[in-house]
Length: 207
Image (tube, rainbow, N blue to C red; front, side, top):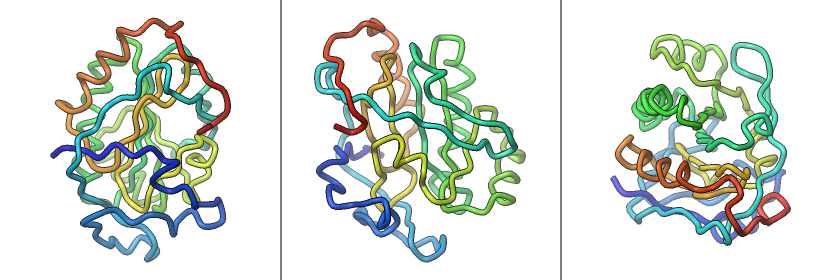
């Protein structure tokens, strides 16, 4: 499956924090009854990364981990970070998340970190899914979508949704729809090959 790259300013320019879960509905969206206000999507357009000079710095992202403790994106500065919004009720996520864990295990010693953002989900169901599938990367439990607001990149009304963060903590790519390892690994390789001092720094989350 190919993926649709969505510059958030274009996809959901009118979405405000108070209206977060009533944002843009993706093509071929299917209601998954996650409170009646969120959907997974199937996308068909190709995805790509933004050039370093066109990237925007993300906001300060913190959150409560699913099984306790805390997450702070700033601690991953200098690494490539895969931020994946998912939920245990989302069929594409049920396939994608274990595949992401395989990529994480292969890439974590190369300078890549993963964090899952469990969104619009029930904690117990998410915990069971993580345990049953032996997911090893950290999962932030974020029922209300606070993490996305901090990140400065709001998902459209669809899951799964993935943001790739470069070594300077700038958004390098945003994908709506499920990714396979074959989709993700070449992009990670390109981002890892970039210098941590790549040109084109920007300021302001989602600016």
